[in-house]
Length: 135
Image (tube, rainbow, N blue to C red):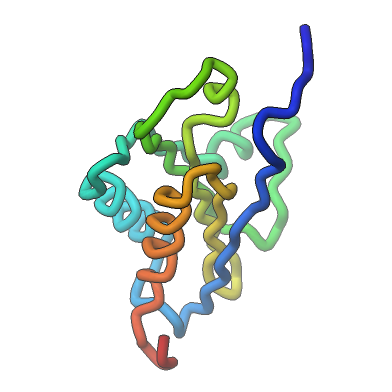
């Protein structure tokens, strides 16, 4: 097996939301919002919802940080191009949603495609719903 670096390293984007910064009250509500965003996007294709919290808690050796109350990943793909088979290693995309005692943390890895990054940033910022604070 050969290990190679395809394209660049992928930094992670994260958005922390206090409960007073969003009208969404749960990971499930946020996941539903993102799923609607994905399905409405011209290039995006929804693949799956993964309950990372439930999976990890179900394992005898599974460990979840005590501050995490819920955690899900939405898996999807922006299928604009498939320039070579190595790109498959960094696809599909995933948005992580975690609920903590303070609020929510939304994370995703930077995509090598500006259209995808812009869409994911816009979707995440759409979670700020001007309840208590201005967005």
